[in-house]
Image (tube, rainbow, N blue to C red; front, side, top):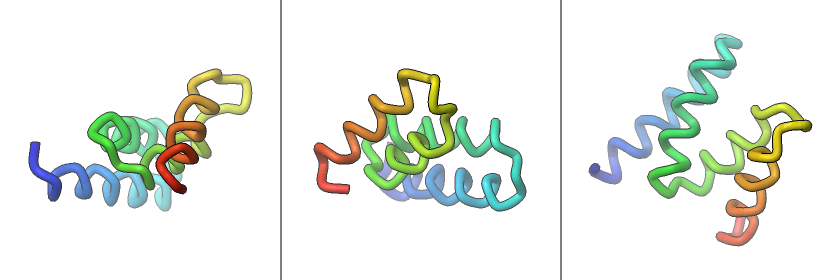
Length: 67
């Protein structure tokens, strides 16, 4: 997958978040995070419920990579 495609997933996640379609925003942010986008890792961590252990995993990965 190309770097541009990863960044497109980041942008789609942000756009769906603006429209308050949280499930779609999470899905696109997850795809971008899995492809290594640090900003998507941080965004996904913020979108997930505070009771979801994956929230802290993604926020921790983002922090470890400098965000």
